[in-house]
Amino acid sequence: MLIFDDIGGDFEGRLRSCRMAYRTVRVSGEELTLSTGEAIIEAKFSLKVLDRLHEPAYIGIKRMTSNGETFLVYQTTGVSPVHFQMLGMGINVPKVIRREFLETIDRSWGTSEETWIDILAVPTGYRMDIVDGYPRFERSNLTPLVGGEAKILSKEAVKAFLCVEKGSEVGEIKGLGIPLTVKMDEIVKYHSGLFGFTGCGKSNFTSYLVRQALSFMKNISVVIFDVSGEYLIHLLDLEPEFISTETFDSADKILDAQAIPDSLEGMRGRMKVLIESLISSRKIERLLLNSETDFSLDDLYKFFESLVEERKDAEQAKVAMRRLDTFSKNRGYSHDKLLKEIADDGEALDELLKIIEEFKSMIHGMGATWKRLAAVEKFITDRSLDVKSKGSVLMPEDLARRAVSEGGNKVFVVYAPEPIEARRAVSRFVKELLLLKKIMGYKRTVLTVLDEAQEFIPQKPTVSDATEESNRAVESLLRQGRKYRANCWICSQRVAHLNTNALQQLHSYFVSTLPRSYDRYVIAEAFGLSYDLVDATVSLETGEWLFVSYRATKQKNVPVFIRAPNNEVILTKGLADKT
Image 1 (cartoon, helix red, strand yellow):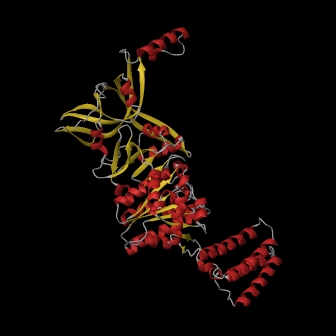
Image 2 (image 1 turned 90 degrees about the vertical axis):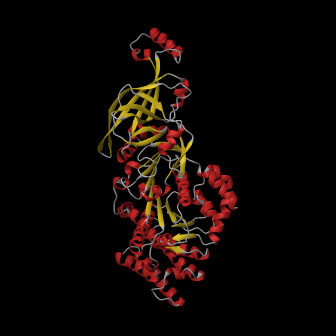
Image 3 (image 1 turned 120 degrees about the vertical axis):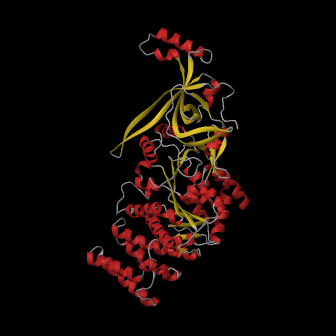
């Protein structure tokens, strides 16, 4: 095997210095101090070397031991061309002399012994021994010796270092152009996180990883809680079951509520055909958070009675109660008649809605009473639309039972744009899922994906907005789920606002561009990463990620920069094949 790449004979480098670096930052009132080992490797100047090292690379620094020669593996984080005259050229040097220095420096690149390249690198914590012409890697805490020869690891050596044989591809290693293959079952089993700012391609990449999980794991279902309306489109060719807290009565309205990538706008017609197919096969369903037995005619009576007792719009409430009484007697309804049953009868529904509308017209249009009654009206109307579209209604507990059932659907997209409703749905789903797993012993792996996870597991939860409830549920899933094949992926752009107890349960994580420095510090501190590496994510392009895993790669906890496949390309082909 070709173990080292000397870039056509141009690379010559040696370790010049090695030290511990410390950085301190305040995050949410808490002071974090990070330490990391840093090495500076001095290399002979070459434009080919300089251009190559602007992309990430792994470097072996030769180290003699009592048992012979080994190489300590470092990862590059930056590169800087240096000319000797640069070191003494401060602003206090007269302008004329500075200009002469600059002209001399410009002419000297690559032609003078006074030029070199400084390479900044951080330790991976591994050593490489060469045995019978092949590299062998193992954990090591050896310190390097200044002056040690440095060599760039070849593609073949990096592949032997990081890539799992016959593993699942998660992207292409930057700078090398080879696929990074990992243990996809470990990325699922031990929980994972995807962190990056808006526009970095989180939902695109998450959708690709979902596809890989479905391909490499036979008995798995994936439940995605989506507050932004992105995943139905990203996975549409897989014909997912689409469950929403909102009610839609047509494919066009569903499409209007979803975020369609610009590159896929031309395929809107194909998407509509597939969504209509989902509707006809009853894969478009409503998620209901309130028990249907909670809504009856008696509830309406009690609502109006409470207004009379509170003396709020009392006269209008008395009129509405008389109207309701007449309506019930004429229809032969008892007070415990469910509103969902009334919604089945179009004529009765219109009469009931008219009573509610007349009451609303007599009171203040934006008052609390008006809003409460409008919510009841929406419920009745939504039930009617459910009936007309021949759809079904699911509770979060029903969804959990479907997810664990063998041979059922494999992909469920839960669209819940209202955060409080989304949190309550997640809480109830997770509680039922863990209950089914623990007591009933269902074997099917269930992967729960939480998009915009800061909505569910914030650092400072409260009771009023249901974040305390969702926090407890998700933390239970992360702590206990692995034993029962109930796993979780967390996606977020606001890392510093996440529950740190939850973050510590993740064993694999993908980090893209995070413009806020405190988000980067939290990542570095939570996962024991070099801040220099995390800081380098600022310059990543859309679709590029820093990936680290304690479980999924061949070696534990070795950071690697990757360029992810584009899910939209896969989706485009899938839509064409389906329609």
